[in-house]
Structures are given as C-alpha cells and as structure tokens.
Image 1 (cartoon, rainbow, N blue to C red):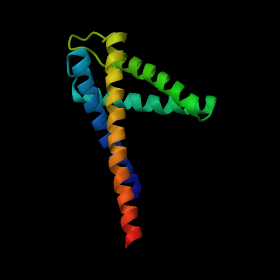
Image 2 (cartoon, rainbow, N blue to C red; image 1 turned 180 degrees about the vertical axis):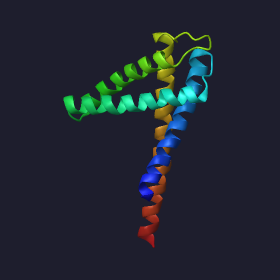
Image 3 (tube, rainbow, N blue to C red; image 1 turned 90 degrees about the vertical axis):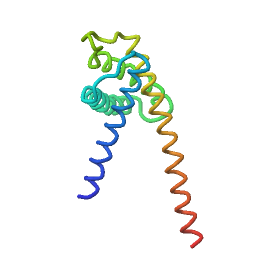
Image 4 (cartoon, rainbow, N blue to C red; image 1 turned 60 degrees about the vertical axis):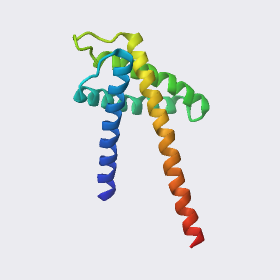
Length: 136
C-alpha cells in the first residue's frame, strides 16, 4: 500500500515539474506563459499519449535502437499535435504547428537534460551507497 502511495506522489511531482517545464518552454518559444492548470492538462494528455504510442510501437517494432529512434520522432509529432490543440495563445488562437514544434523541442530538451542530471545524481548516490556497504 505504501508503494502505491509513493508511485502516486512521484507521478504528481512529475506532472507538476512537467507543467513547469511546459510553461517555461512556452514562455521562451511563444512569448507567453500559459496558466498552470492548462499546462497540467496538456502534460497529462501528453503522458497518456506517450504511454499508448510507446506501447504500440514496441508491439509493432519490438525493442531496439530503431524502435527508440522511431519512437522519439513519433512522440515529438504527437507532443506537438497535443500542444497545438490544447495550448492556446492568450487571445484564444492556436499556436500553429511551427510554434508548437518549437515549444515541444524546448520542452523535450529540458526534460532530457534534467533526466541526465538526475541520473548522474542518483547514480552517484547508489554507487556511494554500495561502496560504503562494501567497505563496512
């Protein structure tokens, strides 16, 4: 039961961070900052779409490098379409595919950099934990 609670908390934190990243990307690329609830909705739809698309591509292509590359391109296009449909300018108009692509590109780059940084931090922590356990 505790593990499920931790998973729910991790997903909530991930959605909040993702919404913040989307808000920053929209500010940089499109020149406006969307409201937080709208950004949360966009991130949730992107997350669900990413799960479905990744699952379908893995079922169709199997696992491997080709699947990863195709998945990256397809997910970029899906994220762009979702961003274009759900994220509106302050005047109510859509962003357009070009601006939505730029917002998505910045969003994905920030997520990748953040993921690499977290991998190094938690990787170093795990290595330090094992080194301390082996020495003691």
